[in-house]
Image (cartoon, rainbow, N blue to C red; front, side):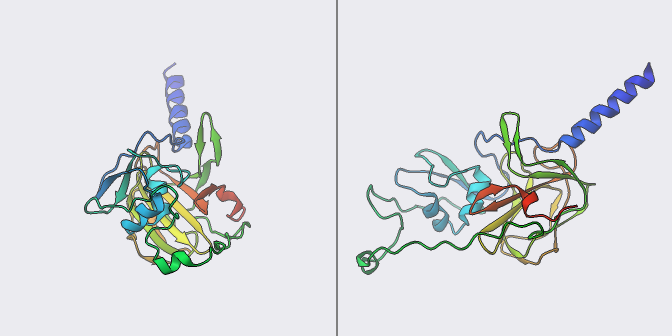
Length: 248
């Protein structure tokens, strides 16, 4: 009887370890580390907020759980990581162009079609696996929530590598549930996210190469065991990382 109870206990431990991180449901930002909350005013846009605080708009989206950058509302509190004080953000009046700070000469010019960089090529092998481990949870719906990445189970302290070369746009404590997190911006509007890290080894602003060690696997934030939560975003939209990674 005692042996059966012990066996049941180990099974439960294994189930929780394989569960990895839960699908995150944002109930407002909760952060540690340096930064300030900016309260949105009528006429503020997320792009103007990002420009005022010299922060990448993608970082603000990920850190605050903002899926659509055009859907922010007056009174909403947005966490600005590493900001030292609250700044005044330009307010756009109804009917104003959605570009702050244009000169009168620029306003007289005929409107031109906005050109977007080409999205990253979606093909297996475009990115490399960021950590050696076991895939414990896939991308997509998990119950009533969205899991916007994949979970890779690995031992604590296992090196986490940059899936492609790029610039570190965020390195610190992420939004509710993510723990210590790194965001890297790559060419062609591609962004990768590495969460639940035990230690971040590269600071914001650092240029990293594909395969460079950037962090160590941990279990910080909302996590039931050591693993890496890995996300891929194209034009800020979450994508299934397995479409970019080589098959195992």
